[in-house]
Amino acid sequence: MGLLGSKRSRSTLLHRTHGGLPIHRELNTNLHSKLTVSESLAGPFVVTVTPLDGKRNQDEDSYRNLIEYYSRAGVKGLTILGESAERDLLSEAERQRILTMTFESIGGKLPIVVGTGNEDPQLTGQSSISAQDLGAAAVMIPPPRRLKTGPGVLNEDAIFDYFSSVGDAIEIPIVIQDFPQTDRPKMSPALIGRLNREISNAKYLKLEDPPTPLKLTRIHEIAGDRLKIFSALYGRDSFWDLVHGAVGIMTSSPTPEYLVAMHDAYVSGDRSKAFDIYLNTLPLIYYCSELGLAVRKEILVKRGVIRTSNMKLPEKELADSQKKELADVLDWVERAVLSSSGVAPLNSLRVP
Image (cartoon, rainbow, N blue to C red; front, side):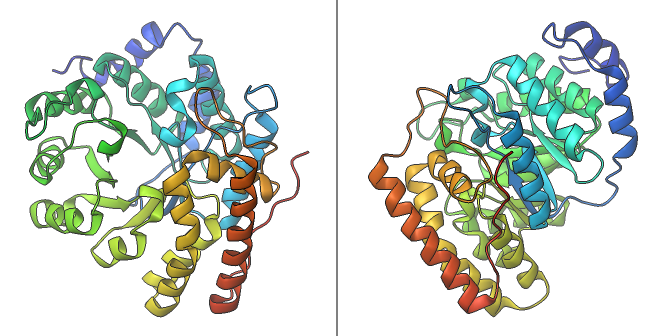
């Protein structure tokens, strides 16, 4: 039995301990009964951001507009409360509002993956139980930063025990997030294969440890088709990750129509079109990887999806000169993709 007890006791544990916050039992039960994901998760999933108003508080109208924007783009699912949501800078009440708004807006219509990672496995388990109770299709969990060791030293048994304790507490799948650039432990392909082999619900991997095509191939050699791998890392190697066997792309894209069109063209056999879209969106991907989350928010502002590109402090925001350069790059990319592949930009009605 793991640190959180058996799966049979999870509802009792949730009722007693979920951060002292009230659990919306009626809403949870209704949403859970509507959402049935019997097939494997695959395709383009977008990791959502947290829109803020002029005072850096949650902008709920912008968030609902954002969900609608992604839905119209044709994404196959949403991932919420990941790194791109500024999760570590949100209060527990703010996280709860994101959960509630997302499931109210789209629960039962698209699979929702919830980021639940915490340094403490007990808290990770409690958040994962809550997500499961709401109707999440899966939870996304990275290894804790506290388990990072020195160069060449891997704390693999401790990482395994952490994931195992959470896996014991829930029934829905775990998406293992492999993202060492955020000061988290680097996980070897052997460890990832062991997690998938020995933890029955560790079924997915969000791979963000470059060069991702090479690591993806090595993991496939160990785990085979048992582990489903999502490309990520801003979509930087998304085309090549699909070539090497990724089942989808899970990243915080502010231009989801290009993500969907590239993926759909690839799986339908039109690799030339998929490659054209990928190449023509690389300038935006470069901006995202170099300047971070602020770029994605600014693109969403320019498309009328959210009101401001404000970040939670102390995160950096774009300078006016960077915003102007980004506007030029966005305009070039939109014209290039439309000309080469016929994919029009998905602009939004302005936030009410």
